[in-house]
Image (cartoon, rainbow, N blue to C red):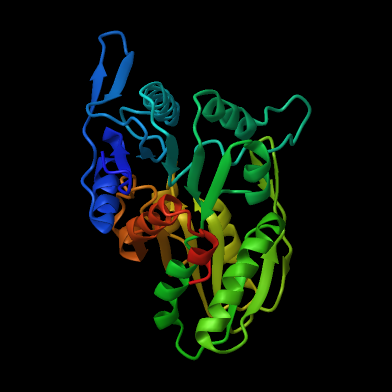
Length: 328
């Protein structure tokens, strides 16, 4: 084994993404076996030696037909454990979309803090590092894990994509809730630097209780401006749309939306296709397999993040800085 070369695996459901990352690294995916049993159980094992190796396992934990997020999490954990049992020196879980990252606190009595429970599972199988992309709450993510964690940000990719569409317009970056203000502000700072002019800030009022969303206020100047609603993910699309409608009601000229993870679950096709949101940009951390409405498909752009993930793996393998990737 060449100790200077990382070993890259991608479980079957993430194989296409893994091959794209491998191509950026100039590495083939390491061979492995995944076997299904009649009763729904499964196993996965490496087909070559990993002894003493620096191993990276890529698997994005979104649910899809045939494999739920729970199925994928279980497969990833078992495979990591098998790699550690096979004497891998270091195993990094590369998880572009991390399931359960939204349930990071108790919002009512006896609520689970599922992010922490997931962290315990990763630690129990001996993972050395978890590398992910734009988690819901970075502080909660960092505090949940006792192993090393690294978070990549798609902000620069999203900004660079949107800049040509903005022209000379006055722009305001809008957070759909108070909790996302810091994320939106980092996006705003990057956008202002690229545009070379000031960019405004705004945020919407949002409360969620028993699955019901409420809140009407919008703080910030949006009249006559191009508004960009920024969030970590779009699930059903209702949060983005209600924020976009609030912007238009207060005189916004255009509304665009940017998020790292496009889950597009439930009625997202219908909600976003019929909305005043002119354009939606996400990354391929979650493939847009749920996007079926032609009207929504025409509004949607999906950016590839394989290059960013590959750069992060290269930095980790060489004991370099992930922070440097955020500043590029």
